[in-house]
Length: 218
Image (tube, rainbow, N blue to C red; front, side):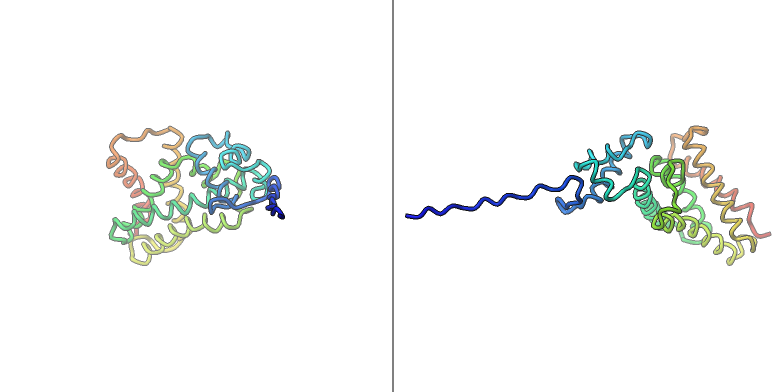
């Protein structure tokens, strides 16, 4: 009587560092997710591709199939940060009448609040970590949207007679400098946050108003 033997099929071992898919998430997505998680527990200076790979459960070599260095990974994280910022602004905008003043205030408060609540993200998104947006076209495109949003609000104010016409670009940059500057003063500890969130919001909106008042149409 012949005895049938089952053939044992041996799976080929995965090549070290070769991208693979597991649980519906590919290696790049896993690395980005690991990077996001490390943002909440580790300083930017201490984050390394090796730590990200370990967190993602992939080999250190695997990271170089997707990110040539830490700054390339930070670029991907910055893109997510900007998307998160735009979503936050949209929610804040829904609380207003969406007129010029409402939009201007909403953008100023959202910008400040986002930076204070996402300090690691902010450092990646707005400089200071060696990420050069010019070398990452996708990041450059999404980061420019921040400027365009404010530019459109300034143009709206000019068309409705709230702001003096002309020098739209200069007025946009002046507003951005005011909002970004006050956020950085708090971020670096030069100014201290107020305990009452409502009082803090009122303070930021008052500062934002000064930028608007200086551009008002006479």
